Image (cartoon, rainbow, N blue to C red; front, top):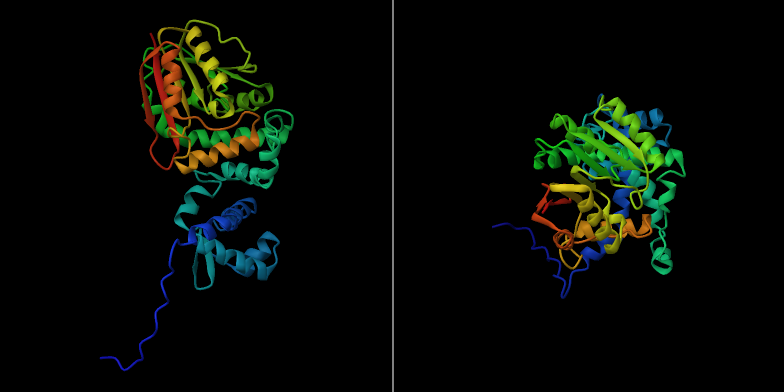
Length: 344
C-alpha cells in the first residue's frame, strides 16, 4: 500500500461540456498553421531530412524564436516530427505536402489559403446575400488567380478520379460532353481508359485557356477538345453518349440544376448516360458536416453557391426522363457522391 497522500481528483463538470465550443472557436489556429507552412514551402525545405529550428529560420528567412514555436505547433498537429531537436516531415506530410510527391496536395491547400480572407467576411455575406469573393475573380478576370484555381482543381480532380473513373463503364461510348469541366482532368482520364471515346469540354475562356495547356501536357489533345462558352447558355449539341456534370451543381440554384439536367436529356441519345458528381448533403442539408460547411464556402464564393441533397438531384433526373438511377458515395476521405441515370 502506497504511503503517498491521495490526490484529490478534479470535480466532474455538471451539465453540458463546453469543450466542443472552445474547439470550434480556435479551429482557425490549426488551419492557418497548415496554410502558412504550405505557403512557406516548409515541407519542401524538410524533404531531404531533419533540420533544427535555427536552420529552418535561416533557410526560410524567418525569425528564429518565432520559428521554433511554429515548428513545435506543426509537430503537435502531426505534420512534423521532432527528434533530438531536429524537425522533419511526418509520413503523411511527406506523401501529400512535398511538391515532388505524385500525391502532392499543396495547390489545393493554397486555394484554401486564398479563401481564408473571404471567410472573415461571413457576416457581411450573410447580411448582403452577396459572395465575399466574386466568382469572376477566379474564373477569368484575374489571370493569376484563375490559373491558381484551375491548377488546384486539376490536382483535386486527380485525387477524386482514382475513385470516380473506376465507377463508370463507358465501354463502346463515343461522344462525351463535359459541362463546366474545369481543367478537363476527368475527360483526359476517361478517354484514356475507354479507347474510342472523345470528350468535348465546355468552359469559360479564362479557364479553358489553362485547361488546354493541361490537356496538351497530358498528350490528350486529339481526344479531348475545349470549347469556350458559358454552360448556362452554350449549345449542348445532340447525339451524345455521355454527359458529365462534375463540381457544378454547388454553384447553382435548384432551378438552374433542373435546367441543366433537362438540357443534358435533350442532347443525349436514348440510353445515354448522365453523370452528376459533387459534394452532396443528406436530406435536410445538415449532414455530413463537411457538406453543410461546403455549402457556406460556396455561398461565400459564388452568387448562387450552396449545397444540394443527392436525393433531390436523383428526383430531378427522374422527372427529366432518366431511369436506372443510382447514387454512389466515393470512399472516405472524399466527400463526393455520384448520381447516375440513363435516358429512357
